[in-house]
Amino acid sequence: MSFRAVCRPPPILTALSYVERVVTEAMRLYPPAWLIGRRALQDYPIGDYVAPARSIFVMSPYVLQRDARYFADPERFDPGRWTSEFRAALPPFAYFPFGGGPRRCIGDSFAWMELVLVVATIAQQWRLALVPGHPVEPQPLVTLRTKHGMRMTVKRRDMMHA
Image (cartoon, rainbow, N blue to C red; front, top):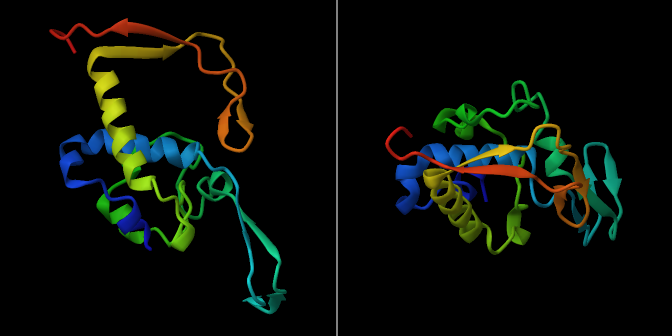
């Protein structure tokens, strides 16, 4: 399945297109599955090399989604990069935070919808800021998380001036 089919928001979320771009960019930099492994069922040719059956392949969305061949200034958080044109030009599997193909996460459509709705709901009423000086260090376990958590200050938005 292509990136375009996997990462298109459900129609109900089209009004939240900027939030969807923010979530897409956050998932690019910090995908929940930082490593994905697969075992070859049969010999698998890769260029001039043939990986024998039962070989284990490891792909890293965390590494590939930071590749400058596909993402200009790859370490910068830039939701604006996610235009329709950019999505259409992105090669298959240059972006795969929930895996891909027949083994793609069964819950990815629900996860996208949930992520966009939760971020939009929180951002409507609250401003969150990282506590100054708090270290943010990725910790790659089964899923990618922060080693020291994310200590935040939370302030209610003034709805008259938001």
